[in-house]
Length: 164
Image (spheres, rainbow, N blue to C red):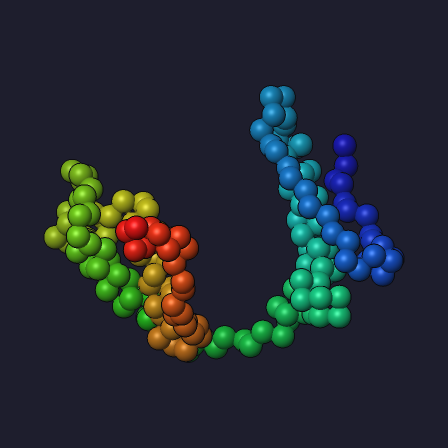
């Protein structure tokens, strides 16, 4: 069985610019071979590349994801080094903040030495949270990400808010 490639559809996009296709794939069936999985992976990679070149999430006349990617500003090695340093510094702050969270249950790991490696006393979820917060903090600090907080109205009915 050869490698399956998606059929070209440039003419179809012109005929129906708002049409789209969504697919789900399940792998791991009994009797499925590694070759079957490789064929599916090759197909999905080809479809992803074609989808990025052809899709228009910003409207029919808008840029494709490939166009947006090619228009991105190039990051210099100095900017990359500054980002990595900012992430490292933010990781220290966020790890300490996580360790000081009220009500946090410490991880019981006999192999971990909390005095030398405070990150080792975090569970997997906490480490992921620290990583996400550290990257966000570094992006904000360097001006690559801006955040805005807005007040939202309560979704509770008025009777519940007033206690009536």
